[in-house]
Each structure stands twice: as structure tokens, then as C-alpha cells.
Length: 125
Image 1 (cartoon, one colour):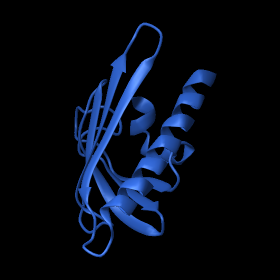
Image 2 (cartoon, rainbow, N blue to C red):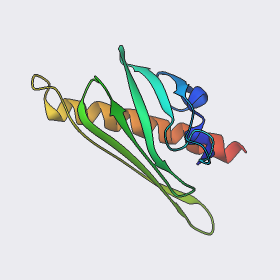
Image 3 (cartoon, rainbow, N blue to C red):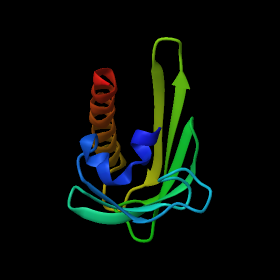
Image 4 (cartoon, rainbow, N blue to C red):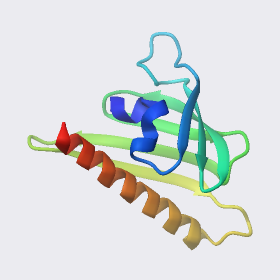
């Protein structure tokens, strides 16, 4: 989970630029609850805040103006004896002028690619 809370290095996995702008709350893990990161992806710049984070779950949301509204991302890790399964869910509302199917296709493609890169990175460790 530490890899996904290392905001300044998320570009290893996700297409875009990431920069932590606000540190986590006192007593939270590095990059954890309260952290805010600036994200630039697909020509859009916006901010995401970590709502909660532990060894099995990261929950984050877009704050302020973003490319979608009512956005929340949840990343859950499930450890098996041989590997780790990741469940990555994003819920959001696209702008009125953008088809839901298009937004879903873009997000799905980006997440799948990122998870493949993350898996490859972890296999090499």
C-alpha cells in the first residue's frame, strides 16, 4: 500500500503527473489521511485528498473543481498466500455534456494499465 501512497512517484504506474501538496495528518502513515496531491492527467489538473488509508484500504476523493464531480476512489487489497488481489473502484459523475460510457472507458483503461504496471513492479521486487 505504501507504493500507492507515495504520491510524488505515482507516475511510475499511472499516466499523469502527481505532486503531494499537503502532508498527512499527524499520526497517520506517510501519504495517508489528510494528504492532498495535485494531479494532472488528460490535460486536466485537479486535487485529490486521501480520506482514509491503512494497510488494506485507501479512500480518496477529488476536492474542488475537477474533470468529474462527486468522485471517490477506493482501493482494497486482499492478501492470499501466493499473491495480492486489488479491487479498485471509482464512482463519479461526468459533466452533463460527456457520455457516461466514454468517461467509464477512459477511467477503466487508465486503471487497468496502472495495475499492470504496479504488478510488474511488484514482481520485480
